[in-house]
Length: 322
Image: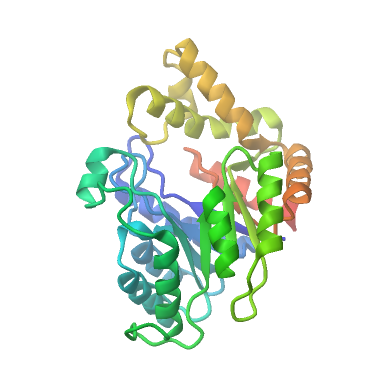
């Protein structure tokens, strides 16, 4: 099974956004040295806890610091962009880093009404995702109505970041699918993936491909891993309470704060959903998940406040999967 990382350029309390961007690039360097297959970055706009909203720019920096690692977007939110512009950006990346670029595509319009207004996407029915995917594929392949530049032989592989409808779209277009969320082990997901493989329409020799994306944190023991996963779970719980997804905080700072009953319950649920544990627990649960989904690739979206502990978790996960 291929193993990849999704880094969302999480900000950390007391540090600048620029430090978060630098940490993402450094993490990619370490991921390549550890033997990871791909390194993905995300698109989020006007979120205090996330420093990057421009995957192509960040990927250019990651590509310049690495030599083998495939680099990709997890993902570009296609309804926010014109297909021609996305094609030009990723063909340029492919020209700079030949044979290493992947284009993951989602359909989110932004978290809040002010963000959607700033993105000029207040109308949630403003675009047809499937139609845009087809247009973009033609532009990347050099068969579109216009020729996107730079022209690059072979184009750029596309992946669909999917919920239920997105899985159906990926099957119709013959594209790889990336699935995340808390329901990966559910019967509904199993049925959806079975339908994807059954109804898949190959495009230029493509075959069904499934990537599962989830938070995976590995430490020496289960308790230590849950502590590492706490800053992300805390940020998510606070966001539900305040409406703002903030920077990661140190574990000690979190422990010193009041924990209202509702926040505590949300944190515990988040930690239970995440895959956080010692090597034995993580290996067992990954094997169960891969057996249930038939996944070809694991995309680990791990984050924590402690950068050194995050690198150690990445190395331990690579050793487990290897």
